[in-house]
Image (cartoon, rainbow, N blue to C red; front, side, top):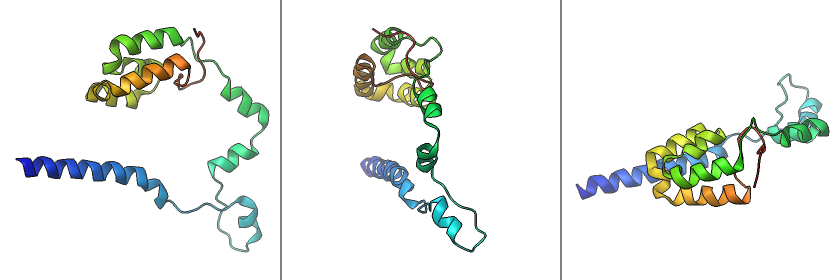
Length: 136
């Protein structure tokens, strides 16, 4: 029984670290200017960071400061304080998958919920769609 639990734990750790390291397996992207200078007909690969760099400043500014649809920092803090172990505050803020994981793990045994509560209070954890409409 102890060997089975140890093997399960090691497998779980390997899956988590493998998922975290899988981003390094993607090929490096080339910029549009270097791809355009070559004579091949391969399409240019532009990363999201390059697109954001070349995006109009007004578009970036409007999306960064867009207020959320009536999301309140006070409501998020109260939900996190009383129902943090269930992840209800994550559902409220629009982070559905993280809410499901918190629901299944009991808010990371309460530690993840405590960290989220502190992040909500200092304004670091906001709604997925923008900023809070009402703050402290």
